[in-house]
Length: 305
Image (cartoon, rainbow, N blue to C red; front, side, top):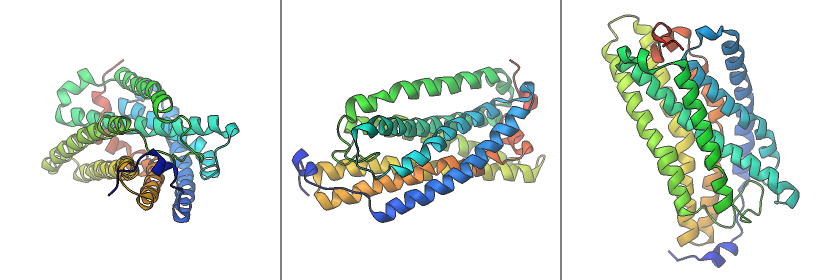
């Protein structure tokens, strides 16, 4: 292991392997198709329902669909320019698209976290749910999520992104700073993961104990949906945050070969994270109405505005 300084990094030519580029194209096409179908289903279904029938869980789902739609819009641009040498006329576009990618990721993470908390309160504390959970609270939480994430996104460009990308959407000269990686990982992923994991386990355990009471099949379906949500959350968002650390360590302490491998790990993980926009349709959008009443907030217990 060597203490690789900045000159070592600059002298190392890093590029994304052909297999990663192929993976990016395949996942992007599949995600775009599934995402358009899934988000279209959500918007058509939810906006056709009378406003008084909306529940807070529907508001969170719609918020997720909006975030996913942002990525679906930029995905063709990102795919086309992914491995293009960065020119001055592309710099602004690349930075905007990359910023939207990160905004979507963390809006999705915190929206999933909010949904998990809503489920937990609704099932574990049904008497308090009427007082705590409402459509207004859901709208407020979603607005705060967007406000905080959007306000924090310029930090990336002010502190970590100036003149360090030789290719569009690829950081090839230096890794993200350690402080920024810790912020993204601890606050942006690990804390939400702990909350989602805790709420999911508690809700599944509660439903499992109540299988003999009420509708067994619907409760089993709900347990499946919650487990699927957790699996999608981990698969989509764990690799990319792990990749940030791998690349930082490789570029700080190892030679060129290790840096190239780490660079490809990050971009392979980014391909996986984008699939969240398509996988959401399986974990949320096509659940039945009855399942939403059990997994989310029962409409009869929904607090009025």
